[in-house]
Amino acid sequence: MIHTPPEFIDLTPEMKARLDRFREEHKDDPRGDVASRVLWEDEKLRIWEMVLEPGQASDLHHHDHDYYLVILTGDYVAGVTPEGSPVPSFVGKVPAEGNTVSIPKGGLEWAYNVGKETYREILIELKDT
Image (cartoon, rainbow, N blue to C red; front, side, top):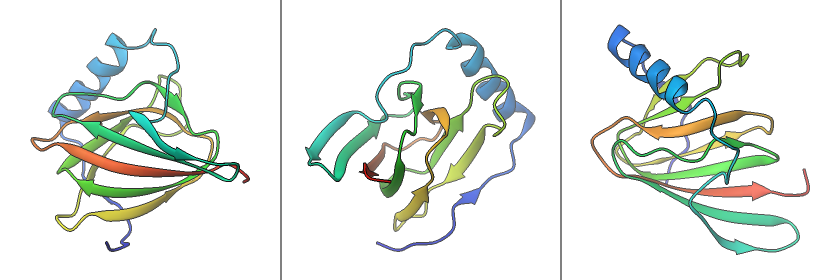
């Protein structure tokens, strides 16, 4: 597994409309879990797995702690932020060899698989930070 800075793609008008439509359709979603399931937990760490098939999205979730993402598979994944968020929605390109990315606490978003491949990642939540 490598670590490279995330590569974000320029949003085409069609992709921006798709993300805006998703945001509008899900604006009343309650907050949920940051990923699909917890794999392991102790007093310092919580390790999650997220699997999203094409077109699937995670729960609306808040990053309560700092995280490391170990991105294993996928091609394109969006972070869709709620209306009024200081961070705009984005689409990241997943490198063929995967990637690791650090995510600071504080963000609120849905992860949305806008690609054609299954997106899979392991999230390492640092509970003491």
